[in-house]
Length: 247
Image (cartoon, rainbow, N blue to C red; front, side, top):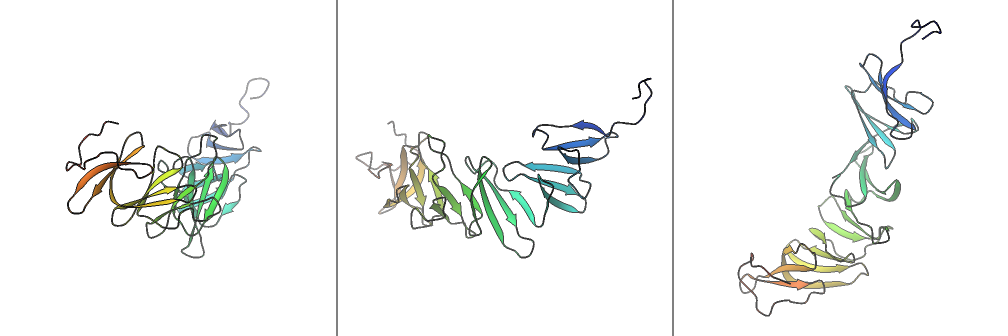
């Protein structure tokens, strides 16, 4: 507007969001016909016009969906060759996991972030979950490979326990896990590298996570509970796997 109140030029944008402290801001043009993302200087980051935008705050990457395909940019405006996608957003514990698909071949890289910090990357795995200890520190990763087998590793990629499993479950104790083999039998795994092997098959784990319901298939299916050290909890095994155990 001029000093006399006349319209000199239309506003450039009808909406701007400063939710990321204006480092990168999604904007809509004045006519509400186009999306864009600008940096703190007001400069557009995209080469193409998107119809949708998704922000990945951990790796600081923007997914720009266009009618010609998806494009990816860093928060600094650098275009990324290849593609990113977040995996299993609600099933990775307290870490955030992304797969970067390489443009030159069919390989990928798993990137694992805790907050905004990249704590692990590997081309051996496609999935990961982890939780912090009571001090807020990540001490382990449960990772899955292309054959859908899971391992317990440290943040350097070293195996904490030597075997891989069909599934690895957390328990109520931060340092203890249940490794379920292909045949259903379980091992108890510990962050110090100890493994207690059993011949029991997995049934369930209690809500508190302190007892594991197991089945002894020989000579017939009988059920019991073990604690997190592998100790049997009931003197007699029972036949009904829905039986209630009051601890």
